[in-house]
Length: 130
Length: 165
Length: 170
Image (cartoon, chains in turn blue, green, purple):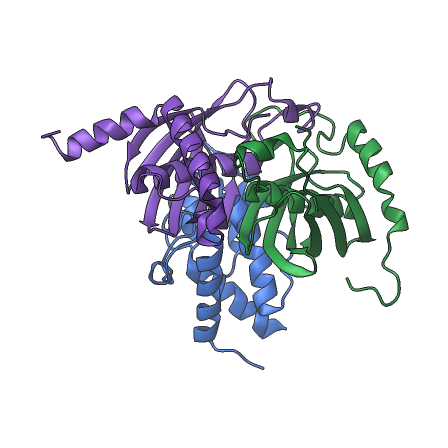
């Protein structure tokens, strides 16, 4: 049964409201998980588990939030991600919007890549592939 | 006060479900501060009972190799208070587990009636997840724990046909 | 062990917020089991410290109207760091709502600058006499005990100065 992007957004919103204790209206597509919604590392695990349950899918480690690339010191130099790192990240996260991150890959800006939209895009492509 | 908030396991299905019980007794000193003249088991210690039941189910599923740490309580909802003479029954159902952590849905009953629902996420903690230097060996499931879990006799507790789980 | 998880009340704004401290010491026996080679404050006792802090705020805001104050629901309790003995856990609790029978809070715990725990709490309050009038004496004794403990923790001094601020003619 195909589910619309709107329905995906509704369920993702419900998941984030439950997991992060934020209000419905704070969960916009552009809202960043760590910045706007206050998510912390343990919340990411909670979010992955809840999304798996809501959408009846399996989310392999690192597929939604590629922490192995993000936390790998090999890809960081002088507070910026290396070109190799940016490339790997882009390949690992087709569901994210990189904008001009490639021009100034400051590691402090990395959390901004994780928006509500990132999750909706991921779920949409995961369900389409199923 | 010892830090054991369950008394024994009564059912154990590896990787799926565990049931443990806790007796509440006047002999427990902390009850006489909570409250003087009207002892009530603190809700926070009911959460710990579920965390211990669930933590052992989670640890057992991966041979107690990792430190299983309480990371998040998604919700803990209480319908009543427990008093001396009561027995609480903890049912922990393992929903999801991998190398990062696990998620457990728990329900607590008293006299077969709903007492609380407690849902927990555990983290498998490695050295990089805390600013403190963690011990090199497993500190959650250590030698003292081995003795404890031996006493639980979990392998003798598979549910019998017809038993509710 | 005494089940008192607040050592000092630092700030108190009745109806609004409270800040308290809980100092962790190796003399607390349960640390021998949690864990033998790595003593750290159990997460549920951090929650208990937060619940007790919220309960003090309820008592100060309602003039100790209810004897029994217990946790009804906790949501999104999340843990970020360990607290070893020798550290002091500072709890900050903000009230979202306090009525005669119920209250809701948001709370955070930290050691120094380091965030340790946060949670959303809902408490329920009552007097035993509401269910059984014969227990009115028990209510009185519990409330008297709480008033004395509140004094010990520095709460009465803070409550008195908060009252003075609200009514400078006192």
